[in-house]
Image (cartoon, rainbow, N blue to C red; front, side, top):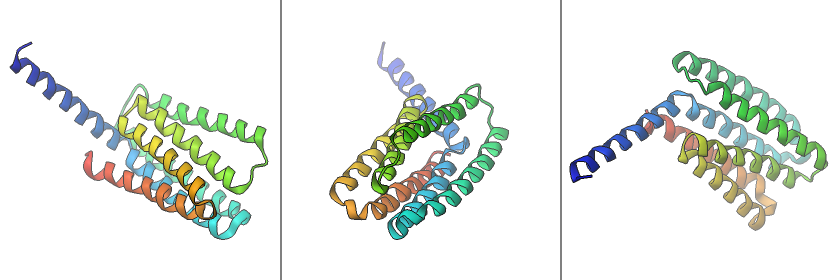
Amino acid sequence: MDQEEALQSLELARQAAAQTRRAIARSGTGYFFIIWGAVWFLGFLASQLLGERAGYVWAVLDTLGGLASAVVAVRAARRIRTAHGWRMGLFWLILLVYGGLQLWIVWPLPGDRYMMFITLLVSFGYALFGMWVSPHLMVAGIGMAALAVLGWLLLPAYIGYWMAILGGGGMMAFGTYVLLRWK
């Protein structure tokens, strides 16, 4: 391969990466991160401030987040047709069902361990999903898990604040980055 062919190959790879980022942005990924980042931000703040009573707040937030996600998914489906779209939804459904079964088996968990279980389950999903879709999502999932464990170990009394700011805030920042930079 001569220098010109190598440069052409690199350009093709750059264009493919840019197309992948645009497709991810059009699929609603940025909005999903913002929606669930807001849910996490408010939910973890409620957990820190209300303790066990925060379950009601989480129930409302999860319902609103699910409805908002459904709206984003329907709108994205109108703009983008992919043979793998149903697999992406099925991936998250299976992950959440398995997580629910695991939680049922180990229940009851103290509040901080319950928060960590949910956080690690979701970050595991992002990391696996990122292997399939985009390395950026994989890094986001791994980073989320690492920061959660670090906060749980170093600042256990403030884990709700830690997760609200770094987990929820980080998800909203990543979603905003996707929307602004990947289009």
